Image (cartoon, rainbow, N blue to C red):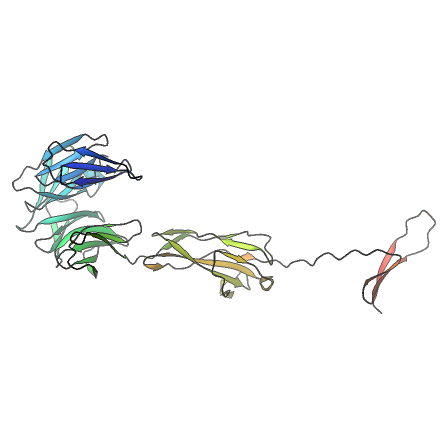
Length: 379
């Protein structure tokens, strides 16, 4: 909801529930305990709106004030509700399974019966997808799509298997629970079938479904008492490349660390591969370093005068994304250690068979500085 909490309905007992992200639950009584709230959603007015199976639409404010609006036609049994296709509509669309209608309620409580469906259509789930209102018709095995800018006009698409609920998915897709086929179907937002995924629990009666923060589809299995996850097939996509630190002063023995970069579509883990490159201006000169597949890498003497980079792949339940590469980092030559100082007279031995002799350039009087030349004698 607009308050950052999750809202739910309690059909038995006539209550609306609110639960915080820390798990604190509060209940709001409806005007009559016999009322049966069904579906609930956030409205364009920053209030929560819900359907009630007794022919009413309800509104509840963040302060808990409840207002009920009676649907003005016979046999009403509102099922699902969703905000309109655009904020300018200032209202919500709802399905009415009892009256075979798709209705619209303005935030002031005025209700219109926008679409009259064929008898027995039993409209159920409804969703705002790609700027259009889509709804599932369980009884007639169809999907309906309202036409923007019209009142009462809609398109139908045949979907066998008892379509019950519908939800938007990643990559311009929509997902439908098929209660009679015990499966979940994937469609394009144009209404073309893409795939169908049977559920493992027999006769589970899939109903409500939604896209989770991991981009996968989560579906309630009414008869099985379970929630199933259907992988969307969307792998993570890089939006910002990884980076290596440090970027300067790198030499043999330096520990390099890779950042993960930034990824869309819920990367839960990452794969790393370090590469060595012979040419800092040509990434085609890069090749994988065997065994260098962790977040850190210690530069070796063999990397001296080479360049290093790392590839990172985000991974979710649907697989690994395309690798994203860091910039190149150069590995400098390690300078030799300073020599061990030696002491002695004018001639000293600095190694076996190697002497150094300091000789005066010319004679000079006492008290005058004498310059020397250094000569190595290896004979």
